[in-house]
Length: 242
Image: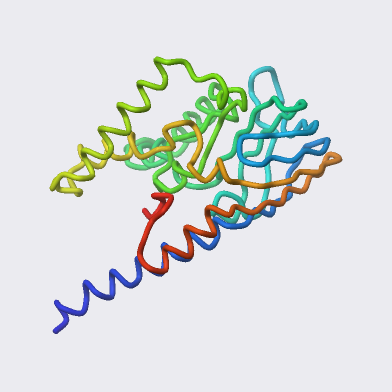
């Protein structure tokens, strides 16, 4: 009896967790510092003048931080945004969550002092706006770093590369491979990441920003709302049920 019931309970728990995640994806509400200006973004179209973020030294880009609900995660996150008219760039990813690097360091048999030194060395070399590789694949999917101009000028070679990656991703998913095989998991992690530098839902995000050092960001995503609704029937419109 237990053998029959247990898989159903596990499936039910996974279903409820996915619906909870979909629900958190719909709204954006965060407090961010430092930031100045006002702007609005509807999908890839931005307008206004915003300088959000900054750097403690040249190239670091490590000052922009926020706290709230964004990208389906409630907590602290990296926020760097520049809007100049209709041009600019945007970076978002969660902070204080496990990354591939942190897991590797925990598995290594080295002293705590050496671990701390390696962390400081790593942080000193890596720009603060570089999106890390997260252990939670959902964080990889929801994170983004891009320039708005990339929506209007995508080189042919890059388009071909994206099409090839999409083909391989779908090919692997359709095969009867053992999903517990580390090589298959690694392949899916690489190919499942937001291949364009942003998640699918980015194209439908509507948000506004207003800041005078302390900034407020509010948004709603109609595609995420639809994904939640159809998800009640077990469908995954945005392919983010991990």
